[in-house]
Image 1 (cartoon, rainbow, N blue to C red):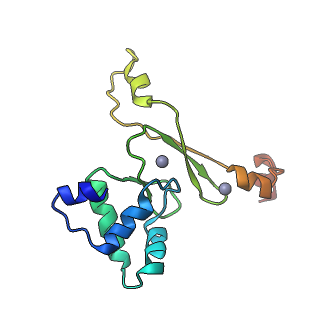
Image 2 (image 1 turned 120 degrees about the vertical axis):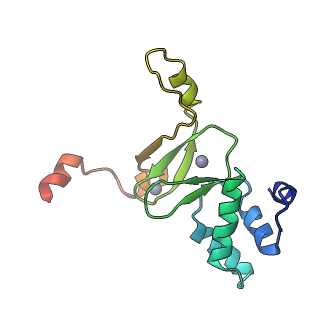
Length: 148
Ligand SMILES: [Zn+2]
Ligand SMILES: [Zn+2]
């Protein structure tokens, strides 16, 4: 990340270096606020603005994928090479990668649909493994709506 950033003629400050480190191999899909809190632990002078700016620039260079998954905050995914989709836990908000294969290829192979798919985004919402252990899924949707 750092090498690419430098190659683009951008300045690499220690704060930015720390952001790159935190993003490298990060599978948590952190928000800007999460990254800010982590950088802030060692570098109290960092501003949220710096974090946003760095993430923005990384996004423009295609080195992170900004993800709009609901829940108010943009998530950032450094896994830009693998064509993957996301599992979003509606209980704890965790975001996990799931490989559904290259969806655009499947779609573009169909002769009955005259639409060229260049990118596919699928968000699967549900309850993650650790949340399933904490809250047993005893309520079914019809019971919930009756009680309202
Ligand atoms: Zn969860
Ligand atoms: Zn991802």
